[in-house]
Length: 427
Image (tube, rainbow, N blue to C red):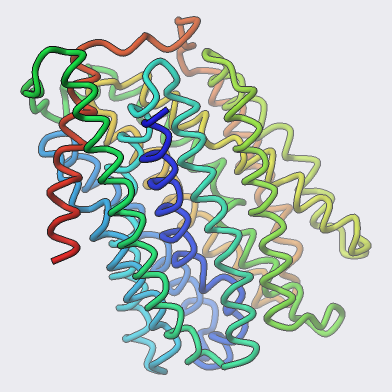
């Protein structure tokens, strides 16, 4: 039971990180008015928001597999909170891009280290641990747009900065609570193993991490990237669509609608936490993108009534985003020696490439005055994702392998390092 407390603290920290990451979601129409982006400028802004997070996840994932550094479990969230709550303070485009890039790096630094730890905290139930962790993140993604919409509607863009101090305080509290419980669990685990010294882990090269299956990794990255494109576009398309005169939604209302998508994703992840079965990963990789195609058609319907649009947005959140833990679990199973890199590919690089795919599409349709039609352009992405996923190898196991002594020692090592990082954070 003690492992659940660090896992919950880790998931709630994920909530705070992803809250910061999505504070900008309902603000795109305002930012476009302030900065007069145009098609190229708006595409660059989308890329500045998404690409640094994904690239840094890959870098930190690789570094994590060679030199685990749990300091990023608290320092990454701190960087994200400081920079991303400051996006409304300055009206220079260069400064906005700098804040987005630095904040995105903080977001990316947190995820690989945290995802690997989440997958190990529940021995024999990797997907469940990852689902709890990602559920926390999806809650943050849902909270971010609603919170920023509420604050900006009342205090303007400058009001975002006031969210920084409480977020930073919560990061410190969750780190301390998680560290104390983890320290107690280390003691229990050490007793059961008969030693308090963790095994020394090897530091595999990137080639060894992929175990000679680079093509499998490339195909998996392609599948996840194509699947992520409409996810990355959803908040932006909804923002530009709902601010148009025929809808006339306020910033707060836009944020609430965006949150429908992400709350639904949270529900999907919660269901996966309790209902997911090992070896279902490939079925989710194939089936979910194909199941989302009719939903894209419905979302693109110009005369779609609000109740049907919002219901479809919610269902899309469950189908596409709510089942994302299957991608991470599949990657970690396929590349056990490079769990950090595998997590970065499916949680970081895939979303970054998906952001690159959607940026020109969303910008072009927005400039054409028909942002809602962009949903049709994502159908080929989903079709290709489902078909290409059929080429991936199946998971040949019936369940997660029970935790070995080495696995338990890895968790012990992580929690010991987490304890040291916490002391640094609270000095």
